[in-house]
Image (tube, rainbow, N blue to C red):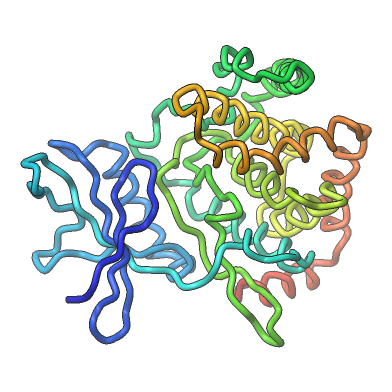
Length: 338
């Protein structure tokens, strides 16, 4: 029992439930006559993660009184929908912070690595799908280039897509593939205050875009959003990569394509915004939300591409040079394991 307040959502209808006793939950309503593979996959992956050391850092699935994790109900307009209840993760989005200390960026990278390791052997039919937000398939969005009105920006993105086709596509077979979160943006990564008030990673939400794709895309997506608004964006990426590599070492092939994947995520975002603007030409929010992404893309276009390779390679090399005991200390300090 409790009170409900509707939350913003793209596809589902989400309600924050403030229950008696102070606990909070998220009730999610998904339209449909039968549960989709994708919906069942989201429940299955959270149940799998609840049995790992990541429990408490991702939402838990709350069973009904009869033990069901998914319930079908008829709502007021006689349409069918599926209900599921998730635990509410406390914390605030990392996007709300005015500064991102290198130690926090390193910690976020390490936690993403732990998530990818935990999902190494997880598979589900619902993850084997094609969605526009799959970085490995970004070239399928090339037709959206014509929707970018500014010629210089259109040329910038076209050039990046050409680089992706030349430098990444031939190496996709060399990369590890697995089920990934696929949306660790700066609003889905949560933080709280640690000792001395310094921010620390507290959780990851929104598992609705999970797919089977290249594993390193999880790192690329997080790094891309954590580089927004930075005077030295590749320095921020270096911290995220360092934390990730200390927990799940990147292969040489992953290191080589990571700068292109980071840039590709930014390009993917503006291409999807261009598509959305076609449907909603008067939506001012689209222009506001993509502004920092364009600023970062333009800043990156003016820098030497060797800077990106030095940042990624340097982060991995510095981590590799650390002693075994130093790596153990990092893992124990941030994650509580050896």
